[in-house]
Image 1 (cartoon, rainbow over the protein chains, first blue to last red):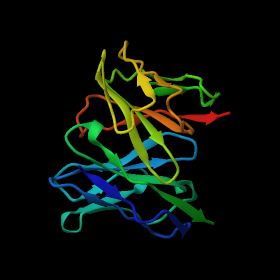
Image 2 (cartoon, one colour):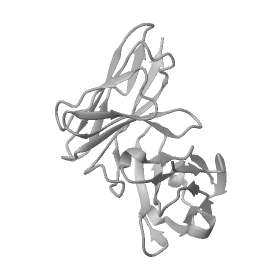
Image 3 (cartoon, rainbow over the protein chains, first blue to last red):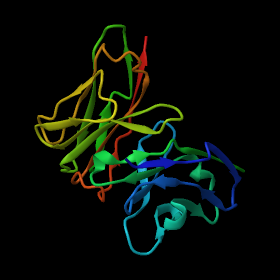
Image 4 (cartoon, chains in turn orange, red):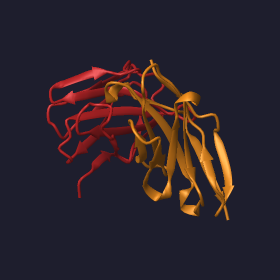
Length: 113
Length: 114
């Protein structure tokens, strides 16, 4: 079965600084990979997803992620963080059906003024 | 506006009581899901439904029950058999059950035990 690890529980960055959130997955075949964002007390919103093709994926709100098969990683990046990006970020890996999706434990992002 | 609604936002359960969480979607999606979210554990799948009148257990179905009598509705009942129900519950839907499909999430219900 697939699994996903987000090594960083909490990250703090200054507003305007660059951001990279790490995600490592375990799956025998080509995975379907997702990044979701959750604001406090809210549901999750999809930032971007990767199925195949170009390994650099662009998403909403200026986020991008790069799929690296050799490292089993799908790290999320943003060149310049805004205070409104403060939230919890979840990486997820899917298999055949959506009921097989596995979520990481999440990384909480704090943005310093 | 199309989307997923969950109610109530907060729910309190007394010992031995069953409670039902509502989930409604007007996206015309076939598949619906219930997740439980605990701090530091991410989301875990409770039940899912690929189509009306059908549902399957997820990873942590014990102490929960669901029904899918209408396409737009997928209520979750937390029974008295669920000994640790305090959590944030998220409902989601997707056009089809396929893993390429984006899951759309509702705003969640926080369940607390009195």
